[in-house]
Length: 399
Image (cartoon, rainbow, N blue to C red; front, side, top):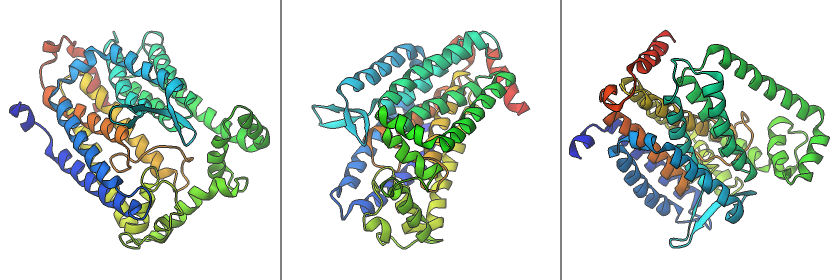
């Protein structure tokens, strides 16, 4: 046990401690004058559980997760189905299960992210050639990703559903998808996005009526402030408009801790959760926001270094999936408050209040640390052909 703990990257542990300090400090500022006062103490308790998950997964051989990946996938998907029938609804999304004994909410869609990374890593290890075969590899992997994607979309949770697609894209890339297949997929994606945006703007009224009929009017209220602010109602644009004003008022150094006029007057909703970056930007300014982004950069850089040093093929697959998951969350959460992305219910990793999100992120970093600890063993000992690792390294060196 001690020999494993010595192999942990304590730079990452230090970064996690800094993120914890930022989270608790900003949560106190965001909630001290509201009904959510005390959430910073809850977050401290979640972090205690999170570090337990981190060290627990770090000492656990990640190949055990890969071995039982199909069963973990089925278990996670079962939870996604169950929550549609017995789940609680918050902010138009039916995605939380209340655990009776401890009276805490649990979000299966967040939990499934890590399970999806492990399962896709398992699927990629089954490939028979250096490059992914379209029918044998790419199609089954895509289908098994889009099934839970649709289940989460049925819960009205667009943000987490899109994270599955980003994880899929990242893992197909590291899995050595053929360049022609990648270019075709990219062209289809670009065409769909461009065509969808054009159609939305051209036929806005018809689209609006359609979404009202299917009970998804709140989607329009999130898309309009992003694409067509002139069409957005006062209520629909209230959140993003005030968030932008708060970020702009922060300037270079911010208005001071607990002195952000916009966030302290509660004109920005959910400052303890999805909108916590707005608190950082207004009270600590561009410099404070840059420090947070720098910490994210160093964390992801250290994760990539672990994948490059790993001698086992499965390790880099998992780390790329985890990195894709984190990058999407960071970009989407910050981007939706500066006009780059539509408003969705995505938390800022390690900073926003939320037990399930934090525990899954900490467990994911723990899995990456397990790769650092156990990934230096010879591949022959794990019954993994060494030519796969060689092809992966060859691709990395060429790019």
